[in-house]
Length: 189
Length: 198
Image (cartoon, rainbow over all chains, first blue to last red; front, side):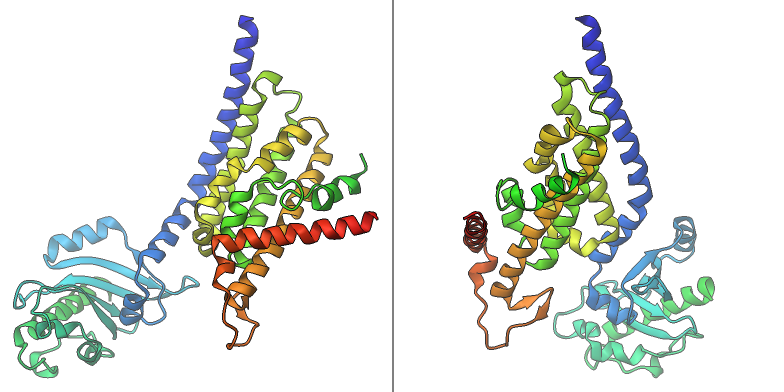
């Protein structure tokens, strides 16, 4: 009786252990791909298209590298790599806060850079500017003027069209772009 | 038993959906488009054939008293393998099929074939039985899901085949439509098989 009990439990244990082993191995092989799929699904296609046309995902960079950059540049948030559906690298994306405060605080944006050092697009992640006035920095019309600008140097205030009546918000947005250019020039180029 | 007969048994004589009518919840829920139907059918073929192979290979090793938990572990392992692979390689389909992939574990057809066939027959015969039953399941899923997609959306595999003027029959892709169309499908199959006998 006792013997058969041990045998039954032993067989079940063995089957369970082999199954667990196979699943653990498979989980380990697929987990990166699954994480990437989930990350792709969580990105808003409109944001991807605005920042880097043709991209499907912003991939994370090495965490230690990003931490070093954060320590040296207080407003910088993250550096990402934009890739298309077949995994080709399209360029770099800098996520940063503005260095000059807007009307009600910092503006947080994505700035995309092509491999030849031109701005491919921008997108506002968060802001607390006045609705209908300062918030117009988020409109495609305002953001379009930065597309194609060379990232070799800072964009000066005389080189861009501020939104009339929303000078603080416009300048704050420009400072975020310039911080992204500074990060790009120092760490990526 | 004759190999061809085992295969035919699963596809027609004892078709899991149209004749045995087991594992209905996934069948009714996900057949809203042909792509979903094919995806689910292929997933079931993989799990059914895989578990049949392992269970028939282990049939002398597994003691009778613990055979059900042993079968369930094997079936659950194969389902999880398919779940992980689909999550990694066919993400869109995985999203569309949702919870019904892990629920293959409790699909009665898998345990039924393990108990009724794989635990009593050779590995080769069990492979053929798994493929036959799986193909039978897939064929039924294709019939039901194409009927629902054409009637309810005017498309097949996302391609428009009915003119724009066609007003989609919304009910076809909603749950009541699934019951009605499946009933009609079973009726047609019964009619045809009786006429053949007569």
